[in-house]
Image 1 (cartoon, rainbow, N blue to C red):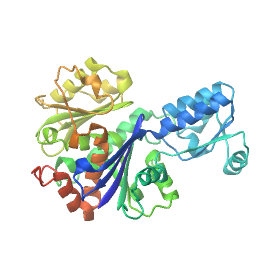
Image 2 (spheres, helix red, strand yellow):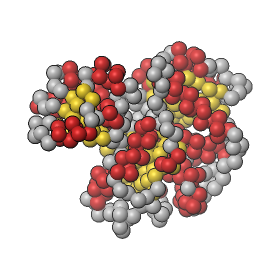
Image 3 (cartoon, helix red, strand yellow):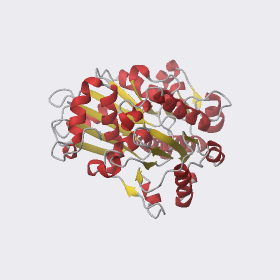
Image 4 (tube, helix red, strand yellow):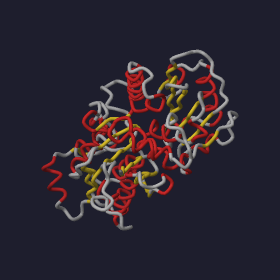
Length: 393
C-alpha cells in the first residue's frame, strides 16, 4: 500500500510517499518551501511591482504570508481578500481589516478583480495536492496510476477558532486538554503510541472549531481526489514519528520535545500513556528557560498558570509524582536550541531522517484510524530485518 504524508510547517512542507513494498528508508521524500513561504514570496514580488493583491482560497497558516501581506498594505498597495482567505491572518475579520488594512470582498467582486491584468491573484491553501503530484510525476512517479496512493495524511498546526474576547492561547490549550481527556476515557488500549491518535481525524470527523484542519479538507475535496484523508496536529505527529526511533521508543519513561519554528510542545510519557504536556512559543524561550520547563514537567511542579503567564499556552500533568529525567528526546526544525541543554538530549532520527519525523507520525497514526491498513503499516514500520518488536509499534 502507499500513503502520501504531508507535514506542513512554517519553514518547510515535508512530504513522504510511504510504500509498504519498500524499506522505509528507501521511500521517496521531498522537503520543500512551506505554503506560507510560497505565498509570502509571491506577495513580496507583487509589492516590488506595486500590483494590487487579491487573496482567495481557504484558511491556511499565517506567519510569513501574514507579514508579507501586511507590508504590502503598508506600502500603499490595495489588498483584497475573500472572507475565508482573510481568516488565515485572524478569525476576527474586523481585526484583519483594522490591523492589516485588507478589504474584504465577496465572490462576485473577487471574480471581477481576477479579470484585471494588473491584479496579482494568490490562492491560499495549506495542501496543494496537484502540485505535489506534479513534482512526483516529473520523476516518473504517477500517483494516480502506476504509483497510485491509497490515502493521504496531512499535519497542520491549528489554534482553533476562539470566541471573541477569548485568548487564542487558552483556546488552543483547552483543545489539547480536551483531546487528552477524551483519550483517557478509552483506557490503555493500544499503548502510548495510540494515544497520539487523539490529535488526528478522518476528514469527516474534524472538530468544527479546528478551522485550519477543516480548510485542508475543503481544499482537498475541491481538487477532486477520491482518496481517504487524515488530518493531524503537527507537533504530536512529529513526536509520534520521533518515538519510532528505537533509542527513543524503547524507553519506558521519558520526556519528548518538538522544538518547532513557532511552537514548542513537550510530552511526559509513561509506559502506556501520555502523562503530561506543555506548549510554549519557541521565540519566547531560550535554552535555559526550556531546560527549566522540561525539568518542572519531569518533577511534577509545572503548572498551567506558570506557562500561560509566561505568554505560552499552558501545561497539564495527571500526576505530581516526580519522574527521573534520565532521557530527553528532541526533534523539530529548531532542535539546535537544545544542543547545550543540561539534560543531555538525544536528537531523534527515526529511520535516519529527522525532517520527516512528522510524516512518519502521520503514517503511524493511520494504523489506528484506518484499521484495514494497520497490519501492513505496522509490519512495514517494524522492519522484519531490524527485528523491531511489534509491541513497540
